[in-house]
Amino acid sequence: MKRGYLFWSLVFFATFLCVVYSVGYYHPDEHWQILEFAIYWNGQTPAESLPWEFHQKMRPSLQPFIAFIFLKLSNFLYGEYNPFFWTFLLRALSAIFSIYTVHIFSKNFQTEISNQNLHKYFWILSFFTWFLIFLHVRFSSETWSAHAWLLGITYLHHSNKENFPLNYFIAGIWLGLAFVFRYQLGFAILGVILWIFFIQKENPLKKFFALAMGGLLIFLLSTILDSLFYKEWVLAPYHYFYQNLILKKAALFGKEPWYFYLLQMLNSPTSFLNVVYFLSSLYFIIKFPKHLITWTILPFILIHLFINHKEVRFLFPVFVFLPFLLIKTLDRLLIFSKSSFIILNIWLILHLPFSLKTIFSYLQPQVIMYQLAWKYKHENVILLFRKNQHDKECVANNNYNPQSQCLKHNVYLKSNMKSWYYCTNDSIVVFQPYHVALIEYNDFRDKKNIPNEYRRVYSFYPEWLINYFNFGGWVNRTSFLEIYEYRWKD
Image (tube, rainbow, N blue to C red):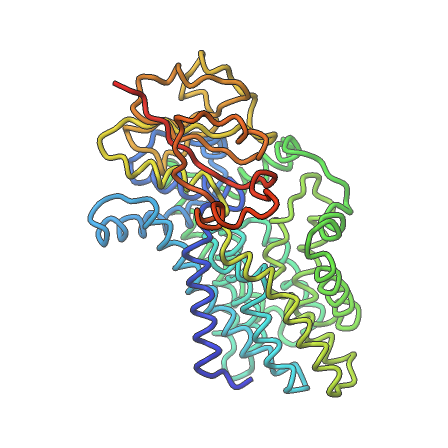
């Protein structure tokens, strides 16, 4: 593909928009295991406020350390602590890392696609597929492990007699980082090692040694960093294995059948697109059984089918390979004609609404509440979040105790703020010591009972759309985020 100015302008523009709008986190681990760990390292929060994983010394500290460094940079650039500017920088860092990684991977692996007309589709899907636009900006273990994995595979793919053993050593460094970012990548690395011994065969011990030296270097450095973080000598991967597999604590978060991921794929709004990616991946694995990518992704997928607790995000690292698997499959199957490329263009167009939705959707409405609360400089603010089915049992607000609440984002809280879940029919009278209450409403049925003295300060839809385009009363029948302010009278 001739990668011109227009293409890269669109890549950076779309990614930048996602950096701006993709606020919050996809899963709480993205917040609690990284950002909260980082502010603990900065001395902003006590260890008692951290989740149980911290006290079991089972989480890697590398990503929290990177976040900590960027916290210092954020404070320097902004002039003071601002969590929203800090997390913006972290999303921007993830985006830069992702773009670089995908560029290197695509440049190397496009040589395997014989039909050059398919190269441009490979590049477009690698940067603009809805799930990849989303992943590229996440400062999460899934994103960073995925792209470290991608770079490791690229260095192995690009290895030859001239650059051996350096490329294997560098690949070991990147695969070691992939493991440190997310320990489950160990199964993908095991697949790489098996590929070296059973498929490569030529000098397997030398290749394994070079790869292992790179990985061991990262493992030792990360162990030293973990020990500094936990303030004692620790082997975090062992603690992770012991807690989740021996004590089976991971299973406490739910047990799903082996076909869980298939059900999720079919129940998704993008199911008709997901099925194509799934079938092309299956075809690739069957038709290219000796390929490096087959040997590295297959063990990773299989182990996740047999682990009791399953979440879609566990397979996120595999998603970065999907454009290549699809295009490589098409390269083998299709007899190319004008109609074939018309179908491919339609396929790209079908991605567009999902990609746009991904770019412009906030992940966490709670973060919007905190952003609003930060504007109150000299007033005490109580943030009232609507309890949902995934939250802990809603406690009667006359027993208010901030320490007992599961919703306590220390990263976003200031000394003049408190956060709380409210339940149906709760009264906010109990919060009268505060000057301002910010109340979250989402369900349209709840909005029918909003008191007149509440003032709307945020709406997902702009005011002009609500006021002038409420045709047929759709606003009154639609659930969307609104935030209201209530001020107590002196």
